[in-house]
Image 1 (spheres, rainbow, N blue to C red):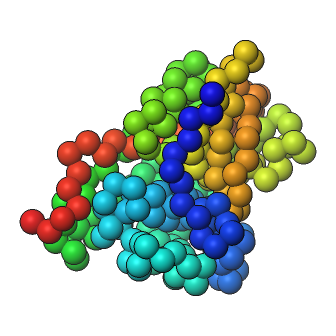
Image 2: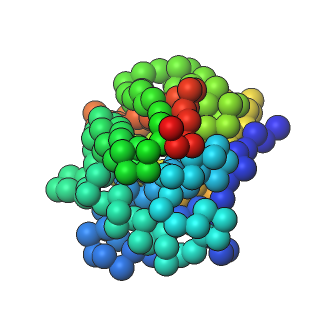
Length: 213
């Protein structure tokens, strides 16, 4: 049985789309910032952390999503080689949340822990399942893969896991990126066969408060 989050749409798009960005740097290398934006929109819409999204959370538009990406850009900035470390993503998003709390007088607390691509498939798939089961998306970074043609849209790329389905072969995951939902074999995806792997980020929203203090 498929287990999915109540994910958001923007027009006909399933989540945000990096290809909307008119800024050349963001259009090419803004997947990390886009993943952070999508995470914040999800937390704002589904968990009441409305301060994380600077526009109207009840009327999401392509134009305002692109504006949000420019706000996120300094925190998770595209760079030579991309945002290729889990730590860079976590540090940037944490700084954004801190600035939001200071500006809006809120107490949003989102813990983050990285799980390296060096970990076993069993550990990673269990972590993803646990996150989705409690209603939390999972940022996924894939760097290189032994099957570059099949995964060309996911190589050196950040995206969000928003669902899963257990199968006889292992576990399939549903991911949101480029404004679409895609089903992938996590076992095959995780087994990159390469030295530069990536990994996932595990969010912890326990104890967070979004209302002013």
